[in-house]
Length: 140
Image (tube, rainbow, N blue to C red; front, side):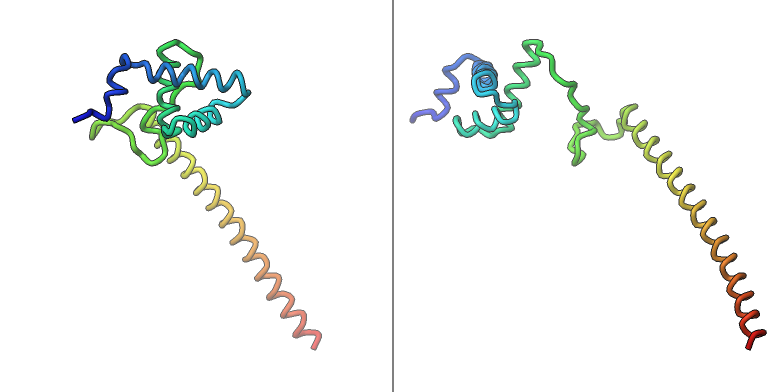
């Protein structure tokens, strides 16, 4: 029985990633594509998913010491799919929570101030309405 993965096992480990990196770099240089567009184009050409192409590209780029934007910590990705141990909190996560609580508190205090101002204005308008009603009754 033939092994379907014999083609991938005959290539030296890591060669696919290196090939992807070189192909993406070539597409960017030859066609002036952005990385994202190069990932998509290579995805269409090879039948690999664009995310797989990107993951291989960035893995090899980091190995080669390429200047890339810093990666986001796993816990800050949307969807909460981080790989943290249960009960373990990072300083950044607790700092983010603390900052969010401070912003929420400040917003609530600002809102409370606005409600108080509105209440004072309503009280003033009620007094003026009462005075107007008294003047109206005197004129009639």
